[in-house]
Structure formats: C-alpha cells, structure tokens
Length: 428
RNA sequence: UCCCCGGUAGCUCAACAGGUAGAGCAUCCGGCUGUUAACCGGAGGGUUGCAGGUUCGAGUCCUGCCCGGGGAGCCA
Image 1 (cartoon, rainbow, N blue to C red):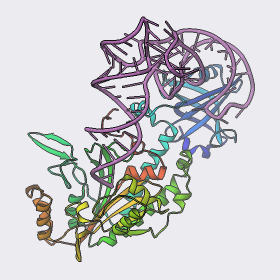
Image 2: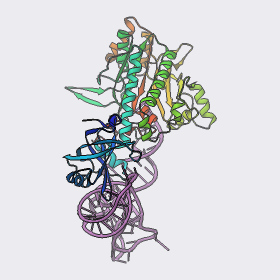
Image 3: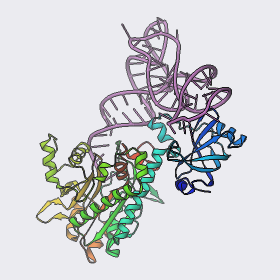
Image 4: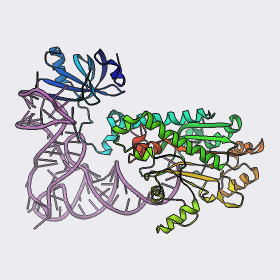
C-alpha cells in the first residue's frame, strides 16, 4: 500500500493503492479514473488488453466517491494531471457510493455548507485545510523555538474578559458558566509561572455578526510573555507572521497553486512591517473623507482602506483606551492612550492580531474594574497576579481562520475551518 | 437588531409585459483507443419555500410567515 503524495518514488514499479473515485472520463476503449486518497489525486488509465475484463467493466461503472483498491504500474506522463499516472492492472470495488451530492458543476454556498462533511473532499477545500494545518504548526513551532511553553486555558469560564454581551452561556450543573472568548487572563497567570507561554484553542463569541470575517467558534493562538513591553510584543508578532508566511510558501506551494493564489504579494512580505499610530490612522482616514472621529474603533471599510495603503501587514498601535479592554496598560504621559496594537492583514483582509501590554499596577486595575463595571469577585485571582510579584508583561492573539483566509485569498473565513459555526448554522 | 438580494428538477440556473415549466450537470441507456469540469445521441426526473389573496388564468402581482445569501452595527 502506498500514498499518492509519494507516487514519484515508485516510477516503473507496481503499486497497490486504496482511494475514492474523484472523477471518471472515457474515450472509446480507454477509461480514466481520478483517485484520491487524502494525500493527493492520481489518474489511473484503463486500456483494453492491459487490464482484465472485470476491472475494465468496473472502471466504466464505478460511481463518484466509491472506495476502490487499485493495482497498477506507476508511469511518468505529461498528459496526466500531476505528471504521473497509474497504468491499471486490477481494480476492486471496496465500498460503493450512490448519488454523491457534490457534482463537478458549481454549487451554491448553502448547499455546500449543508454538505460540509463531504465538501472538504474537494480539491480546493482540501488545499485550504492543509494550509490551515501548516499555519497552526508554524505558530506552534515558532513559539516553541523561542522558549514559549504551551499552557492551555480553560474553555468553561466563570466570567468574561471583556464584556458580558457576547458570551455563550452554558448550564454547568446548577449554575451558569460561559464559553471562553479568550485565554488571555489565564495566560497572564501562566506567564508568571512559566515566563513565556501561549495557549491555543477554540474561542467563542455570541456576536450576531453576519460578515465574511466572523464565526461564532474560531481558533486563536495567544502568546503572553513576562518582561516584554508593547514594542517587544509587536516585534514578536511581526516575526511570527513572517515565519508563518515563509512556512506556507516553503511547504504548501502546491496547495496555493490549487487555489490559484497569486503568491507575489506573499513573497513580498518582509520586515519591517509599516507601523502607524491610531492617531496617524485617523488622520489618513479623515483625509480620505471617512467620517470617523477620534475615539471610535475602525469599521470594516476603514480597516480595508488602511490595509490597502500598504503591501505588507499594517501595525497600528496606541489605540484610545476606551476602545480596548480593561486590562490594557496606559501610556504614562497620556492615560487616554492604551499600550495596544492591532495588525491588519494586507489585500483588504483586516485584523488578524490584537494585543498589548497588560496593566500591572494593582490600584490602577482595581480602578479600571469599577470604570468598566466588572464584578471583582470572579476576577480576584486575576488581581492576585498584581499582589504577588507583579510584573511587566504583554501578549497578543492571532486569529487562525482570518490568517488562513488571507494566505489562501478566500473570500470568507467559513472555508478556513473544517466545520464552521455561524449564527444560524450549526449543521453538520 | 437593521438594510438590500434570493428560494423553480438531486445540483446550478432560465422562463421578456400574468397565458399553463426549460437547459446544463448528476442518474440510467448507447457511441467514441489519451480523457483533462472530456465529448456526442437518447431517456426518466417538477405540489415553482409555506399559507392566504387578486385574476378567466399566477413561477411571475399583493400580504404574512419560513429559510438562505450579501452588508451594517459588534468583533479576531
């Protein structure tokens, strides 16, 4: 048994392969089957005389997505998609498939999402999800190589980190708890124990958003580092994004080709990324006629405009404190400004990173809880971190699906996750 | 929650000004010795999202509801 991704190692040899019938073509007394096995797709050729009668007959009758076993000889041939094909000797039907719903012609998005469990057998979806896997691996390798320790945060949490309107409420025995919207607060505790840490996992937002950038369940990698200040963490994020881009270009070229992704914009991504302050961003927007005022957060159009000004990810820092969460540390000279950063992906993809330096002064943080109207009791443990050796620390979160959507240049984040969860869509 | 757009064959769509439902793909049958979403010929396949209404007549017009898409706000 061999895997299709290794087919070039078997030129001229007889091999055995299991896979699903991806497509079928024929001409007179010759039959072509495209077979996929999860690692790739290969063309098998059936010629009368070179294959037994039963196998030839089966190659004619076998339906899309039937599972088959194929014996044959690997041959290099430019006429075959991928450059290699298998001259079939014997074909066996292992498991039939009847009326496979996803056909070769186009389908609407509703139908495809309703059949997501089958849809991701298709070439493009397959390519996107393989890129996703590589993005995740790149994030983890990058952080592991820099001495960050994976310390996972809980998913069931007693309270929110940012507000209470966007949380999913869950019955937890006889009380209410919430699905995590960020592992960050727990990360801060872990950073005091392990120095540099990250958590990686799903996060949940009950926002009633219906846009190409939103899912109710999405994945984030969130590094948090002791002794790092705002600009240290910005440098870290910059290095990490660059590392991800380079990794995808190195290991997932084939998938980018399947997606017909123009890789020039990705090849162009080098350090340093452009850096502007929130104030500068506001000025650029106002010059262009946007009606945004100082103190307001950017909307989708504003983000798209700003990120299109540059051909690299855009770093925006020093947001107004009132746009950001209670735990953001503030600029000493101007407490209206938070030590925060967002990074917008180029080509109009919007925010992929959000982070900043955390408030490490107990009194300031207590004051902030009151300002934001947050209950103290469930956050008592969080305040402890400022009582027992408070420390300078910073971190950020990188959204996996938005990053994948940008790298793949797909329109909507729903294709960047195996089973997207959206408002009004929870099946399959 | 709000604003637009849509729902017709298994799928993607068409049906002009209201006149009685049509094509490609998929399926089945037949043809073709190198196909590349192959192609060619034939066949079967419909309660036009649901409920009312207007009309001699409704896929088409009106009202309500359901479902989906795009966007806004909110956010990564």
